[in-house]
Image (tube, rainbow, N blue to C red):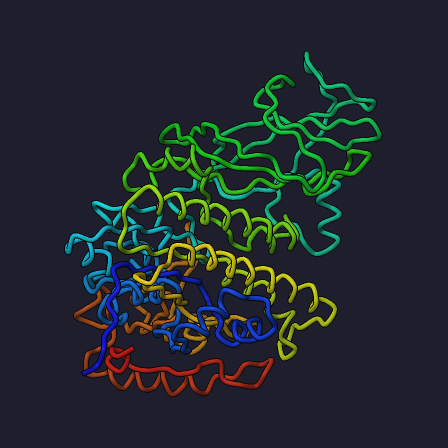
Length: 523
């Protein structure tokens, strides 16, 4: 008779893009003692991710045990069977919206069985799927999307001279240019150089100005300190910064087009030249301090006991030239420390049977450093390899630190599952399926005042949500032109032609496999 171990509690610790080969390599080198511990004492295996191997579909499968064909989450944006093709073209349905998941989640089953659940930042769980337990966030802001609890995205402010310096290095995108002028405030700090001031306009997710701050720069031996004030009055100073330093968290009110919201952010002074001409100031995401938890009052409780929460740890500020790799790692560290404090606080105060949390920086750092660490990458630069690999190791160490803290919650009655949603591969170029479909004559577009529009009456096929090609079928789609009798033949023709595509850089076909929808139901 087989013995089945029964546990009273379970923890799911999810790492986005948990790369098996790199994990093994770093464990062997002694960098990850906690991963080594669980690999030696537990069960370890590499797994094949769902197809497509994307974040929304992967986490939905882990939560439900179902394949994408069953749970219905195929990508970052989804199409319902009743939707015309233009709905997905306009990206109206969010793949992280819990209402679109057709399969029941583990947490729903657990609550129905009387179990207590704690969810911390698990993607695809907002609107809340937990009714009586604890939930924090769950609406992910990945792949260019913005989390719904974001009041203002990260921003960078720089003088014209600093911007020219950045552009000379091939960086600087979407920087807000500020002009420093002589400060004429009634109250100013002591300074041997003439204090200079500028206005900061904080822009919300829709581009409207939701807040204004005012900065001063001053110092004893040139310009060496920056002060952020609520008004043109030094007594309203809320942060004083020297080069390379972060401010404390700033909790404030922001006026959007719809309402007055309270949020939290922090600044880092990236660069300030002694002559005051070159200044670069980074502001991190302004995340709401309320509205992202179940129960609702938990957000205020966490703000007081743990500190402000922020969801965004993505690489866009780095890729735009706003911050450096060191700052990126500091953001990962701050995010990790918040999660560690939070899970310990929740585990102490609230009863729980199942806890699930997700951590994203591994995915981001792999996107950032892959070209530098992989000598086979066409854009590999050997001079960057050591710095990039060190950043990779430091990020994995943070993942290991989080695992170590989670292990403190594990006893002999607790099952711990550490899992990733997908792995990672070399990425160096985009294959635009829609551009290819246009060249082949399957897709027709026209320019209008609103930008590119699809000419549905002339379109036979279109790629939507990057992985899927849809046939514009007559009788099913509002402006379908492909006869049902032509459907199978057209699909086979497109599949055959996809396998004939060659990457001009490598000479290889970029398509791993192209299959019919009915052949994908098991994936």
